[in-house]
Length: 226
Image 1 (cartoon, one colour):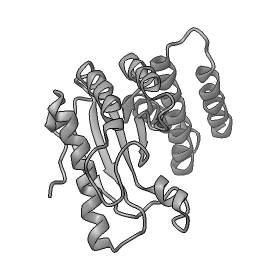
Image 2 (image 1 turned 45 degrees about the vertical axis):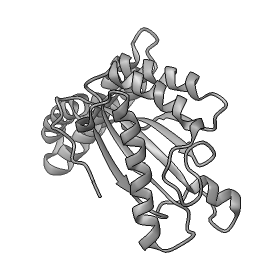
Image 3 (image 1 turned 135 degrees about the horizontal axis):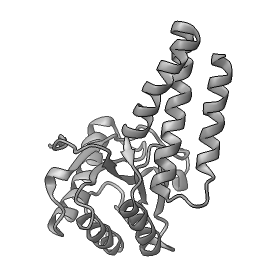
């Protein structure tokens, strides 16, 4: 019986994600509930058979619908606005699987080699980004700086933090509350391209910015400061 229950919950996940008359927020919430149902049912089935599956499904549905981040109308509008603002710049704007808005800003418009000063080409992008953030006060911002593999960790790690800090400070100067933003530096870790070529190193020198709208009221984010 519990096998049929899990199969039905999984089928519901695909069904709700394809409903044409649902908003993006409703689809994400419904899909989250269905995923939670299937996962909870599986755990419950392992623990206690058919009855356990039903109990686990109920718990999983509540967790799937209520946990994590929301993809609200404001988040969707900000994504569209940033796609328009960054068209042709090389910046990529995506929605992550856990409903964060992600901006991947390459070195072409962000920072020169070995520097943490924001290039002039990056300023219009951040101006538009700050405007959208002020219209969504519930959202929090996470900024991660990266370098290529040139140099040592002793150089790259603080440089990556400085790049994230420069981005944060620019946004703060345009009215975004510092308490909403956290910064991190990963140095040359987590490359997205081959560091053995100039083109690859250029892609790895980047800043990633994540915006999230928590499903519950967030506490003030911790900031990594130097």
